Length: 157
Image 1 (cartoon, rainbow, N blue to C red):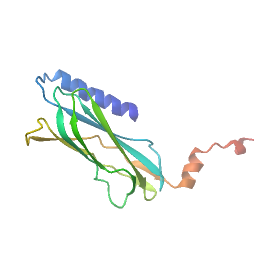
Image 2 (cartoon, rainbow, N blue to C red; image 1 turned 90 degrees about the horizontal axis):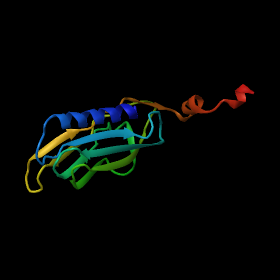
Image 3 (cartoon, rainbow, N blue to C red; image 1 turned 90 degrees about the vertical axis):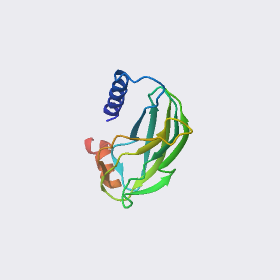
Image 4 (cartoon, one colour; image 1 turned 60 degrees about the vertical axis):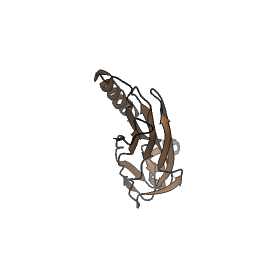
């Protein structure tokens, strides 16, 4: 999954480079990822949002919003699902992370994070981009997780 996400990001970067965009215009790409793709109910899950400026200009008033999670699906543990960066220079990136816990076993659906920004600090020309959407994450009970992932040495002896 991580390789696929990085390939997608690289392909998008190449598409921007080949598009002939000139000037000092910011272009933001957003990569949403999790620290594990097999989730245990009521255990921490870290969400990372990486915002890359692959354009030639500075992005200003960069606002990250990942609040589209269903209220009954996760509990907030640490951090906020929103972040603001004053500016993002060309060729740089910022990362925002927060921690949630899935409330119950099943599947954890995700939506894209929304990022808004301006290409000029004094203008009102708001632009908007979205992150990738995570695949549905399986949420297991702790006992099911242990059955699946614990080494079964006793059974082999």
